[in-house]
Image 1 (cartoon, one colour):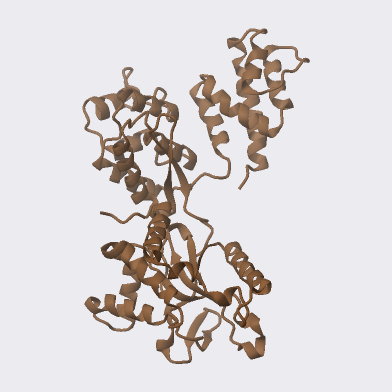
Image 2 (cartoon, helix red, strand yellow; image 1 turned 90 degrees about the vertical axis):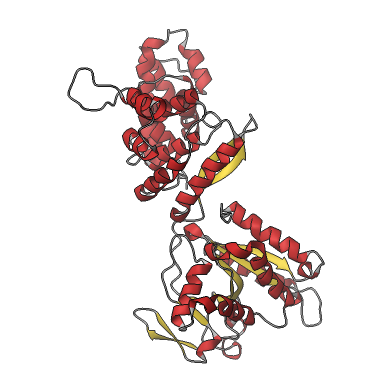
Length: 458
């Protein structure tokens, strides 16, 4: 999502004003050099140094102003109130992950178990860059009230009787903007504060564990100093709603009807064992195996100790007997994670996406097009991952000849799914018939979960 026009207008006015306030720090001959450094064009018509600075900002285009604001924050030591105001506008670029207060506090509690810094100077510098340490103070109504900086040094650094929850509360992290909180966490993960890759990874693992349920994770990169960089990002679209009807594991097209159209209640008119319908809310953590297992146990009155194996057999039984590659894809998923499966999103087979009550003879091929997904994973943050196993019938006619029409239909189906908010991964049946297919699938599943910071807890 791009910057809003309101953001761009406020950025223009604010940068113009606070840059104009710098008039006393630069001579008439120094201002053109400053403007050049900020990427702004010099202007020739002005009556004062303030006007000189302001008119250059106002004459720039939006892209120039955004770049100039970034550069100004790097180079100019603004008063803290002006710095914060400009920071908020620069950071408000439409990509900021939303981290509600509840999850900020849960993260703060989780961070009690680790040291927030190894480099004291870097830690204090990061605190100074994001918070008003010298303007805020503990209100004891005396003339000698210490600043927040002094309080942090005394109670968190030199004599640590504050924990991470108290520290984040004192600096205002629980009430700050999403951008300020997120960038502060990213900075705490940096090599300036933690000049040790194991320490960085430990910190990042804690962050991912605390923020996963609100759909946010850390994207890891490599910095110029060969240490890790951390960037918070939303896992998928936060606007993706929870599925209303999760119909899966069908051995054939089920006979369904709306028992209550107002409430969207679905009834199975054919043999109820032909299909499974998960009818519980799906949390922001996604649909985990343990959730599905509990639902299966309670819905079908099966002992919890037996539900795990019976559910696995039920899901496997729905796979087409004519598709050994699909069965391999299912089994490899469970081999990839073994004992960690209960805490991970479940691989749902034979999931209905487009269900048409009419038959093919009544409706035509549209009754089947985009009807089912081979596999579906519902990950944290509303991410929906589809895995398709493509046999020859996906791209060739009954005579075995390549069919551009079938290929085009398959691509169209992918577009429909992607526009509906799904990620689609396709495997060719030939690929899954090769000797190393199981190893390749296990590697794929692990890489997929690694991408979304869903590594199983050791």
